[in-house]
Amino acid sequence: MKLGVVGLGSIAQKAYLPVMMAMSEEVEWHFYTRDQEKLAKIGKQYRVTNLHPTVESMIESGVKGVFIHTATHTHAALIQQFLENGIHVYVDKPISENLDEVEALMALVEEKELLLVTGFNRRFAPMIQELKKVSNKNMIFVQKNKPNGSGTVQFGIFDMFIHVIDTAVYLLDEEILEMSHTVTETDGQLENCVVQLETENTICIATMNYKAGANLEVAEVQSPEGTYKVTNLTDYASDSYGEQETRMFGDWDHTLEKRGFAPLIRQYIEAIKTGGKNPVSLESSFLSHQICEEIVSENE
Image (cartoon, rainbow, N blue to C red; front, side, top):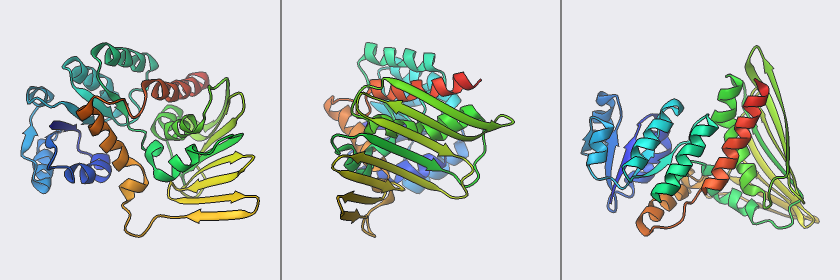
């Protein structure tokens, strides 16, 4: 099966290519990036010979699916181009910062009966999936801290906070009935953000602090049966009426497995092969984009 990779920046090199190259016996990989010097260098490094000078060349090669790892502002046009040529698409979050574009692309996906998978890797992190299994959730906390981040409100929400929101959306088991949020900014630069999502039986609080003095990511689920927490996607702890449990990965477990990239990549490829369902449903992905759009638009 032929699959393409569009964009070979740091995210592609760190989070995707190591997993992809381990699948070289079952996948014929095709690369494209505008920087032809980088294309030749990375192609040589990974022994990939199907290197394309243009997107059109990749399309003509007969790839069945692509991974798009380019700048956000290029996503919509590239996604549309591949979908219109009958090619499945995986794209780094966000699909677009424009909700109308997201909606139009999802409509095209359904018309063409193809896959459009958003790269929400945290859903596939094994420890986060353990939190998903907790029943009778009554409170959820999802927190992301940066030591000294910088960026506009729109950039911060769609570049980083969308992961926090999507984790919250994933962990909630019921329809969201109410949402409220608070954004703190200074001279147009994001400082922090707090969002509260409410379902019939659960309250979820999602936060991001750009000025927290440390990198930290925490997801906590509470229920009448106990409290369950995952720190930095890798360390799990639970307490059920004094009965405590901790779990950590082994030294040899790969980072890309722990953080959910590897499972998501494999599930996308398997869905292409088998005609299986989208591992990140359009409905849930749209909801995560919609919440972020609402935060940004109400803060303008």
